[in-house]
Length: 261
Length: 169
Image (tube, rainbow over all chains, first blue to last red; front, side):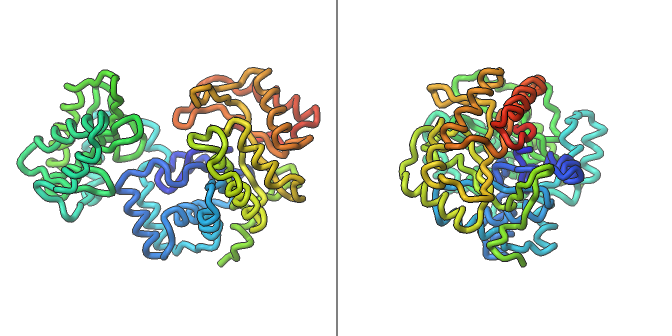
């Protein structure tokens, strides 16, 4: 059995255990795929603390996760091959495993099954997530690194990202920003609520607590416990009113969390 | 702490004599950009495969639709005749368009052709393990996999496949 699974993408957690009981191999691919900026930085921190690369940590984590997991990292470079194979010698201490488990918390089984938008559900999440709000040091009123990022991403995709980041900037007086792990991130004070990111053929407009946002237009994608994103492709119609409302709601939602939490 | 040569220990494929080192090698990146065409550095690609096997890797994951054909041809060039204990795991169920796209190829004839393409390009009489690719890279597709699995079981019956694995997303 092969599937997309890693530290951050843990929908198959329960499935892997079932397969292990039946002695069936599970071969995950994309060990570093689908990480949010925040998840990447948590992995980077784990790697730095063990003097290894993020890829090595991601591979070692998979080997330690379950005995029926087989790895097939690919590379066309001897250096990367040796680096990948050496990951099998890494022993991740339980503390590191615990930290890495926090990264993927929320993408596991159960949470992905439903995305109800009832207010009761949102309220329940709020109650349980009070202490979970992310906070970023260094968010400022205007981050020159973001303006530089906008200049670097000058094409059609960059323009889309720029347009929607401007909407985030205009949500309120308390909006702060920083470039985090290569993405412009909008915060309320030091608590991030939105980001934009440019890929080869699309732009993501993402929300740190997107799972709790009402989304009548069905724009949000992603199955994690917290984060959601809207995928925008050039030449494809954008439901601009609905996306603007999502951004406004994301800001209001974060404000409520900060004030009530 | 495990020694590097142990490569994470072994996993024995149930019902077979094949024991895979848990740290294997995926050959997808050996072809050119977008898993299409020849690699920029053919000698480098061959060197990576030989180094992997020399270090103890005995599980290589590939497919004939990588390249297409190119990746399997590189594996053959680098490693044939294959050492005892090396398990090449391949997959069928997809084809590549001229525009480098990936499409399903799950019809009876496409699966039969896929198995024969793998045999030819890898230089084998019998494939060790064949996976069936049924999903996309991000969206699982609907539809019965029973019929494709039946076709693969027939090919196994003809002695062309040693171990037929289950679905691949």
